[in-house]
Length: 499
Image 1 (tube, one colour):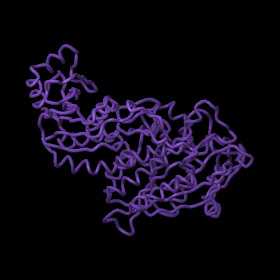
Image 2 (spheres, helix red, strand yellow; image 1 turned 120 degrees about the vertical axis):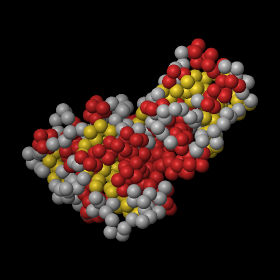
Image 3 (cartoon, helix red, strand yellow; image 1 turned 90 degrees about the horizontal axis):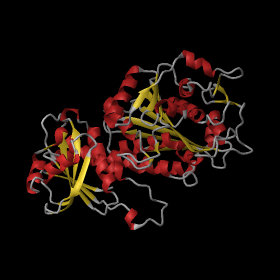
Image 4 (spheres, one colour; image 1 turned 90 degrees about the vertical axis):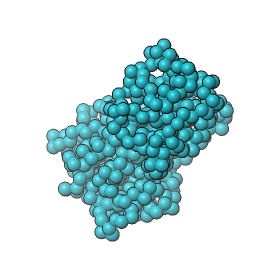
């Protein structure tokens, strides 16, 4: 991460200077001071380049007449009244994306005052820094021949604001969440030969140093508990499965409190099993543990920022492989709940893993609500693309809280339907249910399957994050690859409903 500092509002004269402009190409007080120092060059440049100060617009030029400043960048914020914290994160991210390999080492962002802005200055400054740090991330662990010109040069960012002290305090809390996002991105980026279920469990066990209570179950323990759906997925792999439970009790929480439960699908590699996937793009199936990665990063963030909440995170870690011992289409397995499942398609394995983890969570921790996260279906990508995670929920209040948290953080969700008509589609002729329904409504019938493992009356939400945990192209807040989606969403949900 970059070194981040917040200083009082003034005109910097070294490194890269970033100024904001509102719609109609209007500069703030410090921007006008810079324009005067440059003999009106900013005004002329904006006019000649059709820069209007709209959201997302950027304009760059050399600044040889501004002290030792190497270059100056104008960033549009649009209409001040419409400005959100997420917009400011995008702004910070775009600046870093532009400069990450430029050779520049320092950036100074002037968060100027504009009439009509409803955000507090500390919120504006902290979120600019947050966006910059989110975009700085790179996963270069396995690259040994990276040229100097391709390496990150940025070392520090200074945000200038009239609320420097308050900005620093606010950002300190966000920095802990950033570490959770980075942790999740690291996990999701790892190749499957390096991140087996056992290694994944070890990475989570290390979080105990931050105050989490970690429980890890191996295959013998899970078999003895009757986790037949999870173990059925794992039986084709030479790498044995794990179930990891991470409990966090924040300051001030009651000993008798019921936790929030976050549950993640952790298929460290998914070949599809006997229902083998086509080879094209199969290498991406290393990120089929994205839900578990989100849960791990969230638990780290909550522990580091000492959230005043009681939360448990559980992940089922397996590898889905074809072999002589692999589960077959047509097999019937018995879940920990006692319900039986006819396995029609071994590539619909994530729901089988989650079924046993969800039941274990309810039996062991009696949570007041559950949210599961899984790269569960390709169907959700057909429905929503890569902009939203699909949300399926049995409780309107919980759904509203998750949606609000998504709007706040930019980790957006879109509520999808569930109901009896869809549930009937997974009835089996020889077992209590089958693990897939018809091709139509595939993400919905997957959610209906999971709902059958939710005890009556317990608020539950399922987030299908198949389209949001991995990006095929760069974004203002993350490079191509692991996005870290979901950590900030769950952290904000905890802030909203438990703190």
